[in-house]
Amino acid sequence: MKTIIVTIIILLGINLFANIENGKKLHLANCAICHTTNGGLAFGKDFNMVSYSRKKEDIKAYIKDPYENFKRFGYSANAMPTLPLEDKEIEDIVDYIDSLQPFKEWMKK
Ligand code: HEC
Image (cartoon, rainbow, N blue to C red; front, side):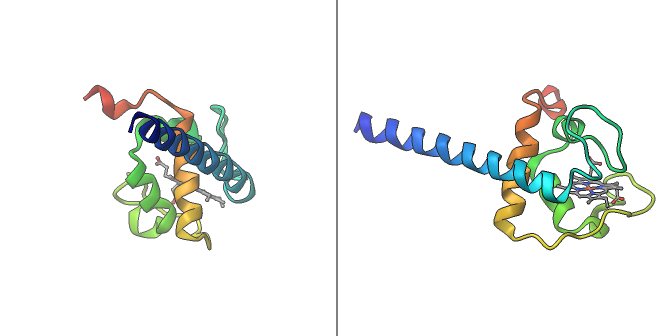
C-alpha cells in the first residue's frame, strides 16, 4: 500500500513537471513577445508579478477570454488578444506561471 501511494505521488510530480515544461514552451511561443518572466517591462505584466498577485483560476479565465475579464482585473481597456489555445495548453501555461513565484500575495491574507 505504501509503495502504491509513493508511486502515485512520484507520478503526479513528474506529470506536473511535464506540464510546467510544456507551459514554458507555450509561453515562449505565444506570450513572451508581450509578457516577460524576470521582472522585465513589456506590453503586458511580467508573469512573475502575475504569479504573485493572481490565483490560478483567475489567470486561466484571463487567457481564455481577456475581453470578458479586463474590467474585473482593473484595466480600462483590453489590448491582449484571445489566443487560439486548447484547454490543456492553457492549463499547462497556468501551471508554468503559477510555478514562477512560490510566495503568493493572497496567502498572506
Ligand atoms: C499582443 C500582446 C499580448 C500577448 C501575445 C499576450 N498578452 Fe497577456 N496581456 C497583454 C496586455 C496588454 C494585458 C493587459 C490587459 C489587456 O490588455 O487585456 C495582458 C494581460 C494579461 C493577464 C492579466 C495580468 C494581470 O494580472 O493583471 C494575463 C494573466 C495574461 N495577459 C496572460 C497571457 C498569456 C498566458 C499569454 C500567452 C498565452 C498572453 N497573455 C499573451 C498583452 C498580451
